[in-house]
Image (tube, rainbow, N blue to C red; front, side):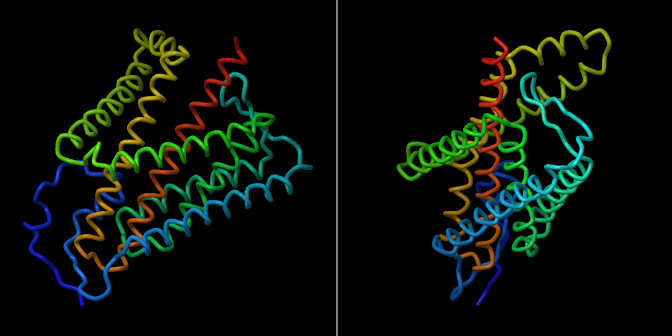
Length: 283
C-alpha cells in the first residue's frame, strides 16, 4: 500500500544538487510503500540488467561494423591528432541516430519517471553502441585502452563505494556544496571558453589553451573527479530510496541513475587515456 507524506518531511536538508539529474529528481519523491518497497537486491538486479543492455549495444555496433566493412569510405574525421575514424555514409547516419536516441531517452528518463524501464534500456543500448564505436572504430590498433578504461572504472566504483560505506566521505550538506562548486566551475569554464572563441580578440588565446595538452588533461581529470564524487551522492540517494521505503517501481530510476554515472565515469576515463596516448604518439 502506497502513501504520500507531507512535502516538508521530504525536502528537509535538500540542496540544489544532490546527485546526477536522474537520482536528483528521485530524491524529491514523497511516495512510500508499506508492503512492496524498493530493496538493494532489486536495484542491483536492475542495474545488472542495464549493464547487460549496454553490452548488447556494443555487440550491435560490432555487427554493423562488420556489415559496413566493404562499403566505400564517405568521410574521415579527426578525433585527436593521432586518432581518426573513417565512416561510410550509412555508419554516419546510424551513429547520428544512436546519439539522438541516447539524448532523448536520457531526458525522458529524467523527466518522465514511469518511462525508465524503456528509456533506460534505450539509453544503455545507445551508450553501449557509442562505447563500442570509440573502442573498436576510433581506437583502431589501441583497443586495449577500452579494457584499461573498464578496469579503472571498476576500481573507481569500488573505491568510492568503500569511502561511502565506511563513512570516510559523507554525502552531507558540506559535501554537496563542494560538489556543486566544482560542477558550476566546470560549466563556467566551458561557457567562458565558448564565448571567448566567438570574440576575435580572445579567440587565439582560447584556441592555444584548448590545444595545450596539459590544460586539456587537467580539465579531463577534474571532470573525472566530479563524476566520481557523484557516485557518493548516488549511493546516498539509493540508501534513502531503500531506507525510506520508496515503492518498488523506483528501483528502475535508482538503477538507471547509477548506470548513468558509471557510464559517465567510463567515458571520462577513456577520453583521458586517449589524450594521454595521443600526446605520447605525438611526442
